[in-house]
Image (tube, rainbow, N blue to C red; front, top):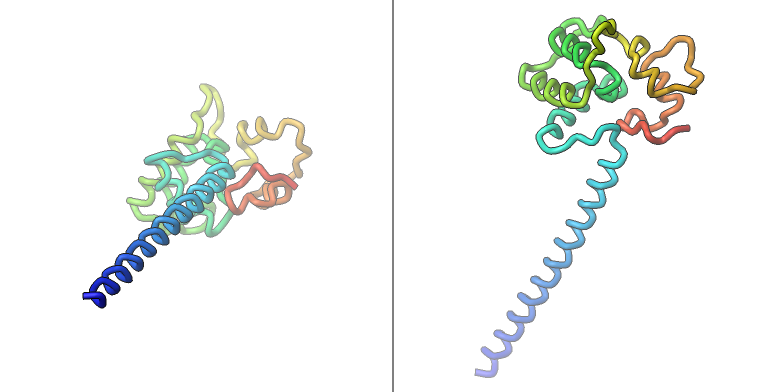
Length: 166
């Protein structure tokens, strides 16, 4: 009888200890995960929300592997649409996008880009973008603006962080 009682006490102790450790680990894990989400979201140029997050992820996975990710608002919707509708000729390179990824990216880019003004010419490159120059009013930009020009001032541009400047 005494032996059964000790076994019950030991099992109760082990179960209680496991529950306490599990709760503590999950609580710490949620806090760590939330701080990671917060730190990632505060660094992003445009904070994609809800249904747009998967489109942003698809954009970063498909585009930022070859070049720095361009914030959607830098180019108008019409330019993004042209880029996505013709992935076979992406500035001289063939890009293998599936219809599903194109659709996800389009929803994201459409939601976070801007529209052309009434008589504005559709820019093909960021160097032709009115909005790009509006974002850099007193910046001495190089004579030839390329995607690499962004990295000269924004050291974390490859991580979609244009807030940190050199």
